[in-house]
Length: 135
Image (cartoon, rainbow, N blue to C red; front, side, top):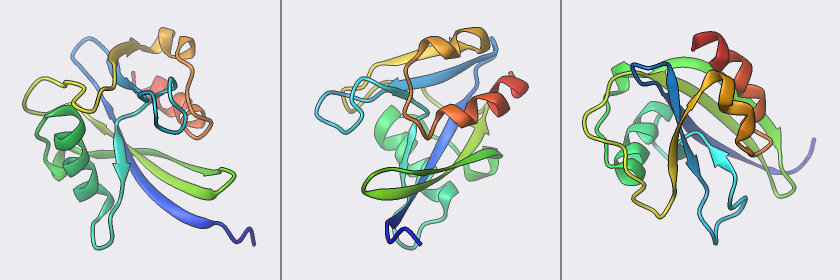
């Protein structure tokens, strides 16, 4: 038993018609700033991971999604110094609007072959093989 609190975070691999996935760079001032990650965020009490993800995508990227358009892809379980992260990753190919970094984060569309060029948080890296298999 680690005694660390469990943090549940939902993330998404937004996939475009060209076989690319959207990555977001963590902005300055946040933990792990400068690293690239899958968009998403913390699941609040009373929310399902899918509900939280739809909310976070509207807040962070200004896009509208439906829970029915999220397909479970993989999950990460990673122990950071202060907490243990559990992060389901969903795939999504359907949304309304154009993703825009509404919280100061840079966005980039990455191909399967370029994913290794983006420095990522330790929890995100084990998700890459499942994503590459999908792309």
